[in-house]
Structures are given as structure tokens and as C-alpha cells.
Length: 274
Image 1 (spheres, helix red, strand yellow):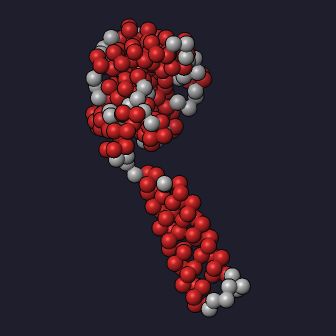
Image 2: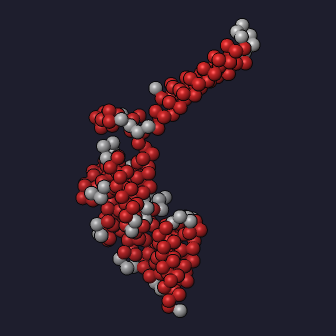
Image 3: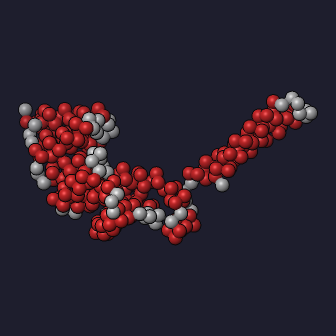
């Protein structure tokens, strides 16, 4: 319906243009202009209505269809929102933990997707966003069984398991999960980065620093890894190097608020110590 409206709208605009320009029609110029304007207006309204229908939120009936029938064409309506939730959850854990507004926004997005999550991974993501960690682990265990020999899916499941274990302060288990994620999906950089965060939470700052170095060797413009490296250096007392890393974060991502705040705090500490 949405696509049909857009196509009909475009055709109406084209017909309007043809009528306005076609001298072969034995109509008065005024009549042609009136019809051209009419077709043009109808076309513009139809095109806009088609785009509006494409972007409007799904109705309760559509959601019910997704839940009951698993209609993939309807489910794709929510793909962008699941991608947004995925990006939020993949943020370095210590950044999200310290930002209550960010976590509230993540919970709100997860609530909107709760009724339409189809796969075990999607349901696990939603449970993490809602901070229902025991439920998330149960769902992710089922998703891991369902993944069978699909290495990328297994890697993705282990990544989310690592996030849950981190939030439950089960740091050694979190490291095991991120290590498994890298084994199945060696091309991902987020598990390496979050592994560094967990090492920092354990007070193993030298290992965390080495971990971030590995990430940045492959992804030199990854702002979160620079941020983690800066924090590791700060804990190791290497303030000059830490300051340069905070500067690098802000250079790559000027709106990276945690880095801005921590840089200012480190600068103040540095001034007071001299």
C-alpha cells in the first residue's frame, strides 16, 4: 500500500507535467494548467502519504501479527530500532554504567521492542536493556543452543553474555565470555574493548592497557578504546600519557562527555599536585 501510493503519486506528478506542456491536447491553456496543478497536488499528497505510512509507528494490530505469525516483512519495520539498541548495548560498559540518562533511554527503547523481539538474541538484548539480567542469561543460553554451528551468532551471544556478567560484577566470567566471543567472531572490536573495561574493574590496569593497545592497533580511530587506555594510564600514574589519550578521544569524538569530564578532573588533579 505504501509503495503503491508513492508510485501513483510520482505518476500523477508526471501526468500533470505532461498535460501542462502538451500542446497537442485540444484544450484551452487555462484548462491544462488547472488539470496539471490538480494532478500535481494529488501526486505530492500521495507521495507524502506513502512516506508517512512507511515511517509511522506500527499499530497494535501489526505488533500482534508479528507476535502471533512471525511475519518477517512486518518485523523489518523494527530492524533500525533493534540496531539502535544493539549500538547502545555495545558501548563500553563503564561509560553506560556512569550515565543514568543514557541507561534510562536504553530502557525506554527496550520497552518499545519488548513485544516484537523474535529471536533469542533479540529477546536477550531487550532483557539486558530492561536490566533483567537473570532472564537475559536464560534467553541467551537458549539462543546459544539455537545457534548450533553458526559462528557469528555464537560470537554475538557470548558478547551479550559478557555484558550481563559484567553488570552482575562477575568479572572473571565476563572475561571468559568476551574471550569466547573473539574466538567465534575474531573481526569484532567491541569484545576486546569491553574486556579491557573488565580488567580495569579487577584492578589489572597493565593488562587493561595492553588490551586497549591491541584494539587500537587494528582500529586507531575507536574513541572508546582511547578512553579506556587513558583511564588505564591514569590509574597507573602515567598522567601525561593519559592526558594525551583524553585529547585523542575528544579529537575523534568531540561530544564524548565522559572523556571531557575526566580530562578536566585530571587536569585539576595535575595542577594541585604541582
